[in-house]
Image 1 (spheres, rainbow, N blue to C red):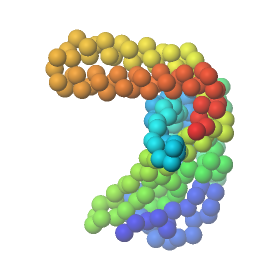
Image 2 (image 1 turned 180 degrees about the vertical axis):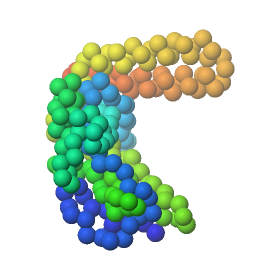
Image 3 (image 1 turned 180 degrees about the horizontal axis):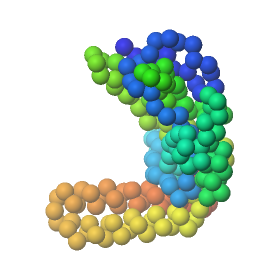
Length: 217
């Protein structure tokens, strides 16, 4: 049994009475620290001479943190039936974080659960198999959404110095592996790191040349 019909977006009022067999959890919001990025390589296609050809585009996508809102923690207060996390959000913004409002960016889903509500992202589909709840994660959908955040300027492109530090860290990791590359397992890891380094360098070059348009393809 899947529970897609029981999920409600954050801005909607819960109507379903059926509860999923999971304990409720804390409400949260997503936020981005400007130092946290990860490499993603998208497969794209074009047509040349009547033939469909695949090409890849490497980009750095923002790593998004789930920030729980709990009364009495980090300045969050309970005001009636609502939580006021204004102080925590202000502190995060002052430290350079970008706060993503759940109502505006439509990433949160809420299920009626045991002893409360269960909060999760809209890219996670819940399915019951026997007594077990299995989560299915739509990775491609999540990556496309993060790409849109970059395309629309909701999140700024990586700072050049942060991007450079990423390359330095990767270079050091490869140097450590090179000493033992005669070991097949280590050689495979080194090859994977080298590929990531090449894609990361290409992603940074796109940003240097195109700015925000580096995410439009």
